[in-house]
Length: 257
Ligand code: NAI
Ligand code: BGC
Image (tube, rainbow, N blue to C red; front, side, top):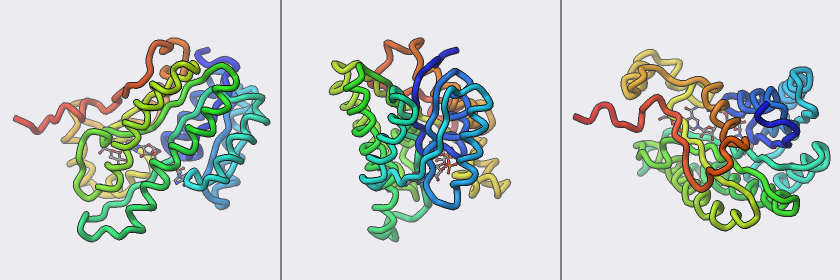
């Protein structure tokens, strides 16, 4: 198994890519803390933790927390480290998006996306990094996006947050390398998850998205989870400070002639 006896937190770990990652990490032998956002999600997250234990995870817990709130993140990381018996893997996955034309974007719209996607990633990285530094190392995998480098009209706040994660990751990789902490990004293309409901509910939009992808289809959460598990493992032990793109070729700009 790739991640035998590793101890991981997956933020936003109860749906979509986070859930598939939690499941894959557990199958690879890791203990997993599934972070979820709201009290309404508690039952589902507890159920997922139970499934992970049945599926072979030595330990699995579910912990509520808003990644954009400092006190929540401090509590999340210390509870995870205490109950899992350490922490050597963070999957910084929680994220939100909402289409809004730039000139109509309110400060609250902008701030909500930056607070979750970028500040949340920073807070989790900082708190988890402290534990890893004290314990001799670890791995931080950020879920960025092809929009860390592809501009996307209507999503300026989202692109700014993912572009921000790129340089946060690169800087953190340099700063934390002496502490034996690897930091890298996974950049998914269009993946079938709840965040893309607005596309999946509209056959025309879905077709338009598929036509942007050389492989001709959206990806699955499990295809991203596979990259997360590998990137976190010793197999990827020489990889830090870079982005692994998993996008069916979307970033090759297939419409460019
Ligand atoms: P999703 O909507 O299923 O997952 C997002 C998760 O983040 C949810 O569980 C949500 O409750 C959680 N979350 C939101 N705000 C939070 C907060 N403040 N604190 C804690 N958790 C919070 O969608 P998906 O696709 O699984 O998204 C996961 C990540 O992957 C996001 O960062 C997203 O930007 C990124 N991504 C998704 C792509 C896609 O096509 N689905 C492509 C590229 C990146
Ligand atoms: C977004 C998805 C979008 C994908 C490709 C992701 O970052 O979350 O909604 O389908 O990028 O554009």
